Structures are given as C-alpha cells and as structure tokens.
Amino acid sequence: MAHKYEKWEVVDKLAQGGQSATYLVKDSEGGSGQLFVLKRIGKREGRFHREVRALGLFDHPNILKLIDVASPNFSPQYMITEYCSGGSLGESPSRWKGDVSTAIPIFRQLCDGLSYLHSRSATDGIRPIVHRDIKPHNIFIHADGRVVIGDFGICSLDDGNFLTEEFEAVGPRYFIAPELEDSLTANVTTRADVYSAGKVLYWMLRGDGHVFAGQKHRESFWNLTRPNPNTPFGHEDVYMEHVNLLLDLMITEKPDDRRDIDNIEILAKRAQQYVERRAQPLVPNLPRPCMFCGQGQYIWNKTDNPDRLSQHGLATHGYPGGTETVGLFVCNVCSNMQVFHSGTDRKAWWK
Image 1 (tube, rainbow, N blue to C red):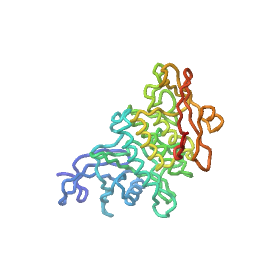
Image 2 (cartoon, rainbow, N blue to C red):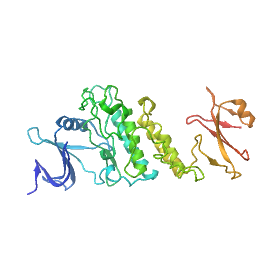
Image 3 (spheres, rainbow, N blue to C red):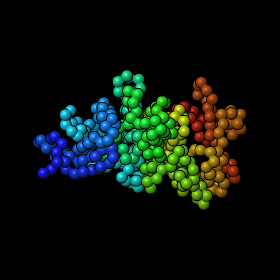
Image 4 (cartoon, rainbow, N blue to C red):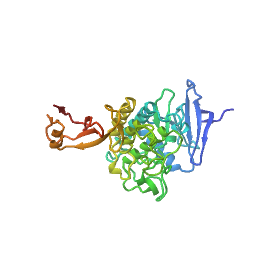
C-alpha cells in the first residue's frame, strides 16, 4: 500500500536531506493525477514554518506556488507545492554553456521573481523580503520553460529573526553576498539577492559547474570572454564582454555599487541583444582591428571637450542641461575614425 500524508499519496521519493525530505505525490481524493511535491518538516522546524509562511504571501508565476499544508494536529507536518518536471538549474550545469540566447531569458525570469519579492513586505509595509539563498539548486524549471524560485527557509521577513546563528554562513559561500558571510544580518538589503543572481548567471554561462569566490569574473581564468592574445580581438569570445559589463553591476563587494533587480533585468535584455547582434563592446583596452585599412587597431578615446571634437570636425547640439560625452575610435595606422554616443538615456544629433 502506498504511503499517504492525509489525502496526499506518495508516488516517489525525490530527496532526503538533513533539513527535510521531499516526495512526489498526487491527490488520492479524486484528483486528476497531477503531480505535486510534498516537503516534510525536518530538524530545523523554524525554517520549515518560515517557508510555509513566506509562500503563503506570494502569488507570482516565478515564485513556487504553495498548494496545501498539513492539518494542525497531523504529524509530521508537511507542505505541498507545485512540481517542476524540469528539475533545478543545479542539475544541468552544462545546459546553457556560452548560450546567451537561452541563459538570459531564464535569468530574466529569475529577475522578475526577485523583483516581486523585493516589492513586498510581510507585514510592516517597509522592509522588503530578501530571499538570501539564491543559487542554482533553489531555482526550478517547468517543462514549458517557466522558472520558479523556491526554498524560502532563511528569507528575511520583517520579524527580525533570520533563523541563522551569528557567524553561521548563509548558503553556499560561492553564491552568497559578502555581507551575508558569517550571517551578518544588520544591513541585509535586496542587493544581496542581486549579487547572488549575478553569480547564478555566470554559473549558467560558464557551464562546467564551477563559480568563483568573491568578485573574480574579470580575472583571466574566470573571464567569460576567454582571453587569448593569439586571437584578433585578444579574446576567444569578445562579445561576452557585454555580459561582463552586466556582472560588473551585480558582483561587487559593496551593496551600494549594485543596481536594483529591475534595472538589471532591463540591462540583461540589452546584453542579450548585443551579443546576438555581435555588437562590438565599447570598452577601453580592448583591441579592435580597423574596419577600413585592416592593418591598424582602433584606439579608444572618450571626451566631452568641445575643442577636441571640433578638431575632428564634429559638434553636438540639441542636448539641453548638460555636456555630452562622446566616444571616439581612431585607427593608429590610417586614422580612420568611428564616433559613438556614450550616454544610455540621452539623444544627440550630429552635424
């Protein structure tokens, strides 16, 4: 006879850990046969009850949906959540390797879920909810590609209780923000989730199951562009620089240097478009062969000096309220020049 938890009949065992056990179940009382996940209470009861409370607050397609909970007098206590047949991101580390076109849409759904969390408060309407444990194994995928965030056992609600001991590390150390190391919780903000989300995006695109500690995505060994002096651009995949520029705004030591998750989602879409179009990254110290003579390399210059622009026969007009910054690429052999507007939200007209 199949084991049952009240009306929920166990179909298969999914996982057994020190914190809890999970099972694949179905409704034995006239259900359609649809499968769900039963999570049974484990040693850390506080985390289990916190997750039940948190999931009961949420209603968003990118947040794990709570279906049912055990009756108050039933033992052991359990919760029922939706089942994601695609498993977790952590189960397929090579699935998105180097593939921005598939990885970033997944990442943007993660951003949407975090944006929803960060816009909510459990009770006081002031302090936002922070997940604090964003990592590949806590992000799940449905068969249709929909992504959901799960495992809210140590999320920060607004009761002042983080359910982690002081100096107890929160989550895998490679994914947690520096301010969460040693469980220092006094100044935890939504930017902690931004840092972890950046690590998840890097992990997906690297594709070998590895990620660095700290902020090392620019170091040669970890760089997604794969530096190689024997290639024309000095990198095997120079277009990944657009992703690096995004990670620069997420994987930082100081929380205040990170962008909020809504801005990151917008910039992620832009980075995907740039990579797919094979757009040349506009950054200093990146060699670019001249498109005119083919012999020299463009040298990057950035200026807002009108006199310097006039030397090249250029001027800007029609921009009220400030000085326009202009990027110039000048070939070191033939002096062929390309001009770029450096702003992201301003218009410039050239004459």
